[in-house]
Length: 340
Image (tube, rainbow, N blue to C red):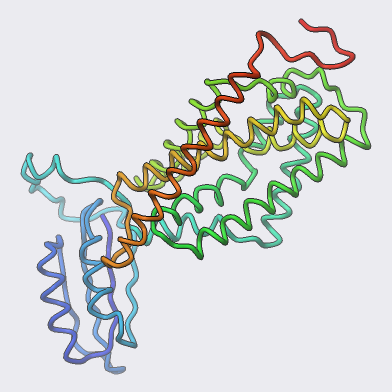
């Protein structure tokens, strides 16, 4: 359940807004008297998966007004218990989807290119680099979880679904900054330290094939679904499954050690992961109905979805074809390390 609280100046818009909200069938709706500041407070309660129509209605009616604020709060419990169940046929049509504004706020937070993002990327890169070199699975997984690189990738997909070019630009800047920072640190470590290029964790990032694309597509779809369903905690598992930092760090390590062929393979895996996550997340957002509020914005967003989906699809086919062409049985040969 969700609680909507609408605070607005008293005036001739209060009545129409109240009637429009009642038409969206909230579980409960109340309107307070005018307070000492000349404001009214409207409280509405909606079931999980409901409320988007009411939110859009309020936004449309008050879009050009001043002095109003709508706050959405999660409801942990409500008494008395709701006994009435929706009609079975109606229940089948209900999609449990987080509010568009909730999804936007959750994902937009991952696009902030600030000091914390850079520090977290630096620390996670150091952890993953030495974890890869030492063949330490625990260290690699830990770095996957704390690395903040998946956020801006999902933000770009959401921006594509909404036709929000500002969000897409911000996400691109943050993602590229994080990836370049991670790769630069890895290159420096590869130049300074005598890295064990025979580590299984490291050489595994140079093995690419159809399974790499399948894993990245499934993980990207799972990430988007977890956000749309309002379950961001499940992203931890997705971060491990479709980690972007290990292949980026592997690319930098191999490049710093002068193994440019292996660096190219790791870079190919990184590109497959990025493109697959974007394509899968974009399709999930689109088919789950995550769209802008107005008709004009929806038309622009639809065009954005088609263009971006086409570009990602062409890229994933091309990258997968290269991966299949490069696929060889067993572990790639590393100079100075016998093939097992």
